[in-house]
Length: 160
Picture (cartoon, rainbow, N blue to C red):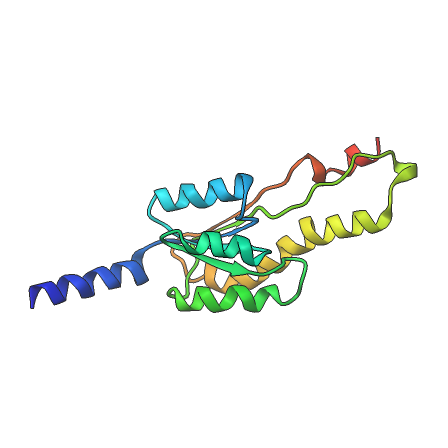
């Protein structure tokens, strides 16, 4: 009987008390390092990635739930909501890390389609993910949203 109680207690702790983070751009670089840091501190991590290969690699890691989605797509909301609901319905940290590089070019050679794609990723993508995560963040006793940018997010560099 005691062993059954310990098992139930462990399940309760994992599902209801363990902190959960959502990390975008989680397949490599800084995003992957952030995933590993959360894991090392005992957090569950919902890791948003764009390729099935990256999802398969992350699926082998304990306490990581890979989610295959593109933040540039409106469907990212549904992709995020399902695993968060299954993990207890609350989110303690959102790390908007997904991004893509751009080429530093002079303003007179700037391709506006490239800028539009960068804005869709760096700005609108972060907004989409944050909007989808808000109901789960609000269920946490203390939550945080962390937005990570890079020098590529600066139009000042492009307009030099």
